[in-house]
Length: 421
Image (cartoon, rainbow, N blue to C red):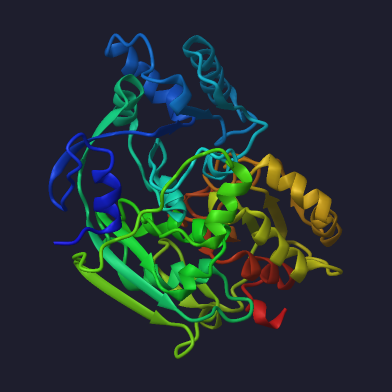
């Protein structure tokens, strides 16, 4: 019986080289990412374990990104504890509040490679599947055990194969594609499953759009979402980690899948999508929700704050002004992305249009700071979640969309089809 990508990736990290869907295995971890949860929940668990030293200080990265810089005393204390832990343990990979969002930073620093097994103390750690890695998020206790041992147990997931062929239409982004897929899967449609993306659309997709899709698979309950290596990933690795050795992993032709979904974008073109409150799987064509008034528009996060996202927003906003009474907040995903946007003149375009450009942080996405919503306010956002209260007051509303749709909506003051921009 052939093996899926998830099975092969996990098998390569076990002592006996075996991993079959449904089996419980113990695997060696290549990299662990922890953010503010280290200072808030993991360190107390480590104290209960009588912990002394991390298993390998070079295979851990600590990131202060959710409240960057600290928004209150509590977050300041969490950051302080993280800094102390990094210093005491000799951890070389540390990103403080000036660095950016974890899921963008790891690939930028060459810490993600095809074939890796990566764990993050954040649910959107599925993002690194874009690089042909098995990556997933684990909670504080599991992360603490990995910090101490470099090992973790897994039940090997079954796999859903999603094949996408054809080209995306003008002003339609990978965010629209994943919103459509999530609508079809539903909130529980991939619970503890691996989603394996294949097809010509995925093969021809750049790194940023691939990361967007893998990032959001957890919204259908996915455990991981590995893609195969394409020429964009190969170029990325040559640029950011030229000395790193890696080998691409491919599924077997006779691999067993529990479900298959197929999309032909040439025969059935996809238009811009919007996920209505209060779930990312509530995807609707933008034409079904056009005209809904908004108070805030947000472009950023680990989902859609990369340079390609900012470029399409700037293309729509250039020479125009956002609607009076609307707040447009733009948060680049990392310091590197911010500098790139500065050099391209994108930041000036945004500010001329009336936008607020912030430092890189998860702040607005998690309702922490730099974009918190008040009661009754409506936001259209390029983030990954629109649960009730996610970005602020429990009586606010969030619509999820691509950066193109968000930018077009900011100009009109209501949800707008970007193809009209």
